[in-house]
Length: 195
Image 1 (tube, rainbow, N blue to C red):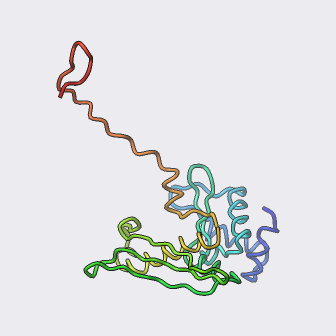
Image 2 (cartoon, one colour):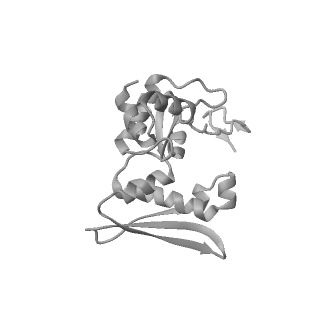
């Protein structure tokens, strides 16, 4: 693997190139259970994304996963905070929380940019975003706020990295259409199903 891809991370960590390669191999690119090892090309592709967006994979500002035979980047919440705060025209952020009868319904994030008359806003709905995970069960408002912030940052600054859920959904096989094949009676003259 090219030392040029490793050097920015080595500079962040204070390690030499060999130590940086080993650190990445043993942490960021360690295969999960029943996964094959990351190839040099897969690691290189991932590090190109990290360098392009100047995000640190060791601190999980940017993360990677393999699906459908390709490496896909995913910018975590801390990565989006880094991206947004680094923009010269960033002027602030606010959140509007919608509750109905004390229940979380949605969160709207508003990112303000210098030179824009109105904020860039995205509203995310709890029913669409929630997952059956511990963080979503224990901190639904925080999780939805982070989701709204990430989506608004993507829109405000034109960064086309899809959300991890969107990438997984793109690669999932289509949901099969369920067709009722039970036939009560067929008209012998027309061949049509008779109710």
